[in-house]
Length: 217
Image (tube, rainbow, N blue to C red; front, side, top):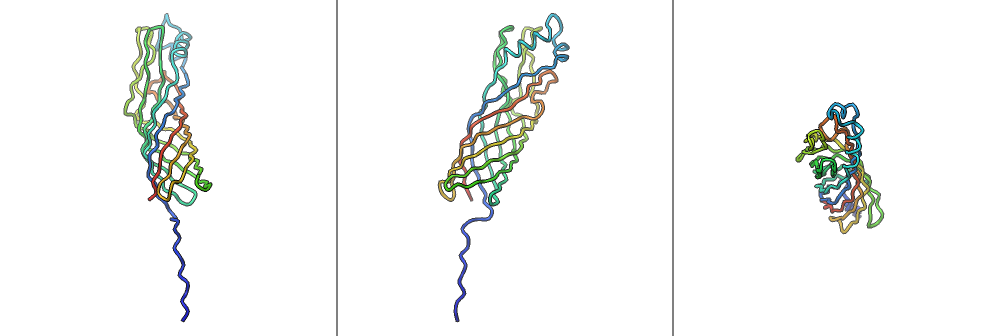
């Protein structure tokens, strides 16, 4: 009796799970904004709103953030779902000559991201664009801004929870079936006000470069 051919099982998993790390640095872009009516109320005469705007505009500069991401990705063919735990910062450098005060505002957050990715395989290389959102919890929220009538600074706090969106374009090198390395430009944009103060209206975004690895299981 002739035997029926036995079909070989596919070596490619329909669903893949991946764990990994990413680390790098981002440049934080702090766009200077100030509410004229608010400045007039917070800073009474002899200081005008125009003077305060000029001192803040001259005294505040962009800064940078260390980024560290613990990642999990669930891959369905070309599509993937991403989450994990991220560390990031918002803020700016300040040097207010008029009151001889300088420092750096660093609002530090850990966040849980939720992202959607799409894989484009090119032999050993894979391109993987991804977009998503992240909810961050503040672990260091103290900041300072110019307060000239007291010859010092106003102490403020950032918000406890901050929502941001992100987009990245990951270039992945597949070492073997289990391990892959990647490099990824990353863009983030913070929704709403980061600083919990009605008169500090800086908007934040960042652009960075991350590298890392993933392990398939």
